[in-house]
Every structure is written in structure tokens, then in C-alpha cells.
Length: 289
Image (tube, rainbow, N blue to C red):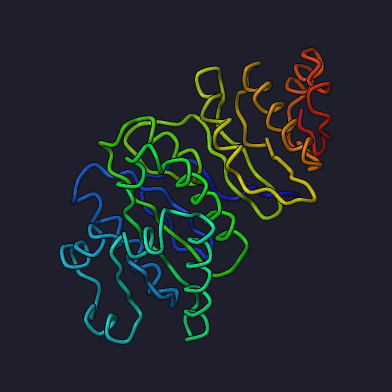
């Protein structure tokens, strides 16, 4: 039986795992420091190298209570590394998701070669989300990072965002993480990677279809086909069905086949009544009642 990756809202930092990809929307410094310490301490327990990205994260290393044990020693031997945001996300030119993936892949491989279990990244990237001109690239990068994490390379990450960001920005970034912490729901759905498929969970209605279209278009898909798992979907209206069909049609035009699995009988009836097979000839498999 297929077991979908853990997903949904969280109140506390989950126990450390090798494929964590957590979005933490924080209200204040105390909230951030407590979550940062829990996430980083979990990585140390697992024997992972910690990479702290962004000035707010670097500051947190000295303000969290209690501090990480022997922080100076951890930094001296390379178990904890720190980098300003620009050195990771702006070095070498405009923000490029493919270049970011190559950077983190190399850093993860290096950590494992040097005896660590993997690389655990804590990044505060609110400034990237606040930039309307960069947000589409950020969304693409977050999805590449999620896919990379779930495929067992030894990479895990917590992406932190300020709660005072524009709700549209918060909605986009929370929609593409399996686990999300925040004081209020800003995206009604989550789209994330799970081994050989994409998973769409939560609820999609007319008001969230524009965001769904954006994140689907940015999602990495293999040339030989994509499986979209809807087993965690609680609600999908007609507008949502049409959005899925338009996405699938775009892939079909590129000769990328689409399989939809875990769909409800109601969704399949809507698909037929709307003649969406004429828009996108998808395959339905792994059905639920």
C-alpha cells in the first residue's frame, strides 16, 4: 500500500528525518530562535553537517536559548557552517534554481564524503519571497529542493519566512512544502514530491486555482511522464479540475504523459462531464471511492 509522505500544518518542529523540507512562518524572534535550535539540534543528533544561511540565522546561533553545545568547536571543525544570503542565492548572477540545486548537491556530497550523514540547511529567505521579480524562481527552486530532499541524497532543509510578508508571497511558498508552520492558513493546498510522483493535498477551489496553476507549471517533471497523486485531496471544484486539465494538456503537447492516481469517483465523474479528456488525455489509476 502506498503511504504518502507526512504533510500538513505543524505546531512544533518534527523529529529529524533524512528528507525533511519544512516551511516555518515565524511571528517574532523568540519563535524563530526556538524553532531554529530544535531543527539544528536534531541535525547534530543525526550526525549531519549544519549549513546556516542568512544573517537572521547566523544571529540566531548566538541568541537561541540554550545555545547549541560547543558552538565554537562545531564551527571550527566544520560541523556548523554559516553563509550570508547573497553568497548562496545571488553569487554568480541572478537567482537561478538550477544553479542552486547544483550548489546544494555539491555541498551535500561534500558533507557525506567528509563523514557526515548529510547536510541540514536552515535558511531565512524572506527577502527573496518579498521580491515579486524573483518569486517565480524561488517557487521553482523550492520545488527542486523538495524533490532533491525526498530522493535520499542526504539533504534536508527548513525554510523560514517572516509572518509579515505579503499574503500572496506566503501563500506561494507555503503551498510547495509538505510541512508548514504558521499562525494562519495562507494556502489551502500543498503540492510536493514523494518518491516517483507529485502529491496534491488539501483543498482547491476557484480562489486558489491561479496559485495551483503557478506551482504546477513550476514543478519538475520527468520527460518520460509524471504521476499526480490526489489521495490527500479533500476538495476540488470545477475550476480546479480545469486547472489540472490545462496543466496536463501543456505536458501532453511536450509528449509528457500524465497519470492521475488516488482520485475520487466524484472527480472522475466531473472530468467526464466536463469533457476534459478532450483537453488532456490523462490516465486514471489507483482510484479511491
